[in-house]
Length: 129
Image 1 (cartoon, rainbow, N blue to C red):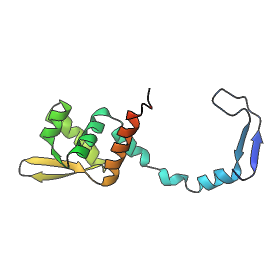
Image 2 (image 1 turned 60 degrees about the vertical axis):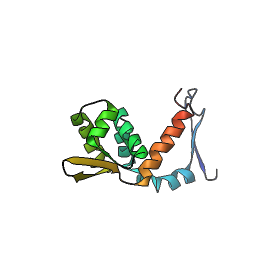
Image 3 (image 1 turned 180 degrees about the vertical axis):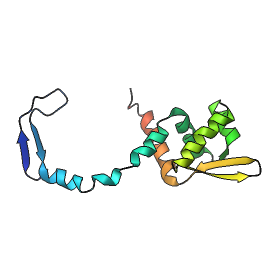
Image 4 (image 1 turned 180 degrees about the horizontal axis):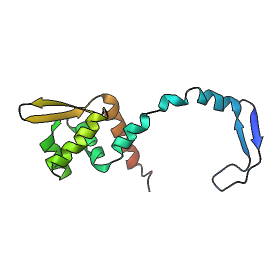
């Protein structure tokens, strides 16, 4: 790392530096761009619910599913499945189309598909144990 260090005394804990100092150049460079990430947490919040994550995963396995199919997969009512699907749609994760009396949902783009699959692969590595 390059840049001027700002050094301040600090009482350390086992998971922190023994001396508080920071790289001013690094911090300034990151601060110039940090707001780019603003709002991304909403995507992860939407997928943080186990049922919504299951819906998203199911939609990586099948291009689209109707509300009744999703309800059967979640082992829940169509009202509950519809609630989760509507939430994901409102968050911009899924899209819907009506065909007669049925409503079909799908993921809106490949990015969500990739995020779900990356998260799945990461969980298989046992990171949470």
